Image (cartoon, rainbow, N blue to C red; front, side):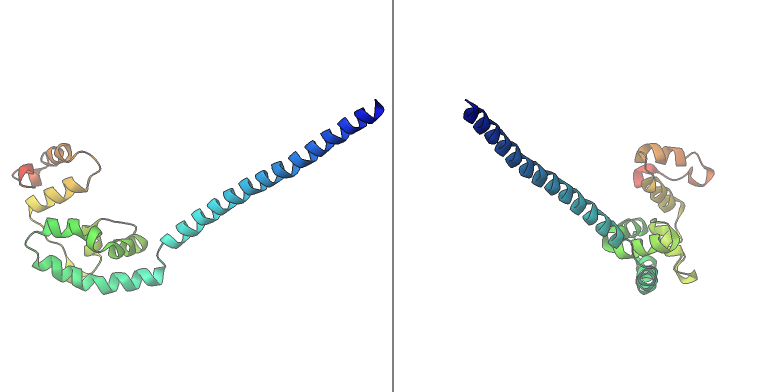
Length: 156
């Protein structure tokens, strides 16, 4: 009888010791996965911000082309709205240098030769599209201002 009890205790000890390594390995694997995910997150966010030197280079090199394009564009609103899509590095450089992502503001930082002159209609459309609210609502609110009273939201 004593031999049976000892054998039973020995089997229980073996079962417990087998579960312990499996649990330990599972915990270690989970910890490693969490650490890898956190490391990847920090590496990806750290690399997304442009260095100041790179921002200066990109901004200076694209200013002239964008200013010339803006001056020649028949649809200035369309041209400015396309800048974040066609020139995302310019917008990122502007954000890094001047803390703005607004194409019109970025172009004005290019210098005097790149002043953006918009008609009241073009300015109304640009400001209404730039807002975070509904376009129609923003446009109607802007039309309350003296400068935009004769402009039409439908022409945007």
